[in-house]
Length: 144
Image 1 (tube, rainbow, N blue to C red):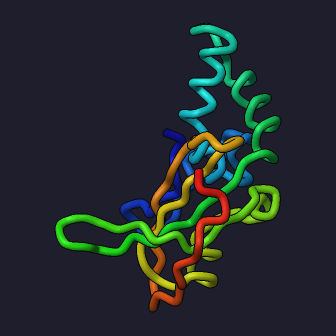
Image 2: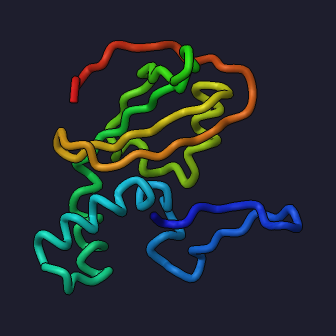
């Protein structure tokens, strides 16, 4: 999995991928799609695939993906996933970091973001936002 920003022992945010120009912008889309891109590259180029193969595929498929946002709600001994947002990825590409968007739009809580490429599940990532929840469950516009 691609690395996420983290808080080091001194309390500062570190971005472990700053040396990598591919991940300076929209790192979270790469995190969502990395395993899917590896599988596609392995299928298309064999075990000798390169990062450039993955980058090219990333640029080609990103405009055709969709995002679904789910709220994680405790239910008994498990969790329920309530659909709270559905977006076309091109509408979200401008976001550098999803957490401020999630906090502003849906409030605090635990959230799951799934990405789909042409109807196929491609990846998932969990996020946590602070504050009071203000999300509302919605109907699934594309049940895939």
